Length: 151
Image (cartoon, rainbow, N blue to C red; front, side):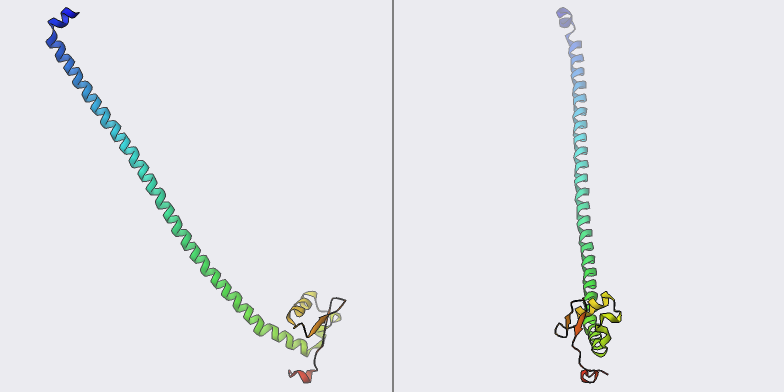
């Protein structure tokens, strides 16, 4: 074999050179393919991270808009509640007190007033005007109709 290699060294060196060249080309192609694959994976990961960040940003903005809307609705509800409470204090309570002062039957449990109305009357009336009775009713000291100024 050594004699054959010495006799044909030019052919063998050409074949060896060609094989080395083919190996080099195959290695270069494999290296390019590996780099392209790695670059593609990196690009995919970068796109995923960017999409995730964009979704988080969109979610934060949506939450802020929702919080603003809920806050505005809460303010409107509070304003309506305050308005109703003001109306209750300025219209309903004085009217009830005036009618109780005018009509003594409203303070009598025997007159057929429901428990709910009696509780509301107890709540609305000033504490100095009425006192609780043992049977669950109220006893109010009411002025005469002529003395109250309401007719």
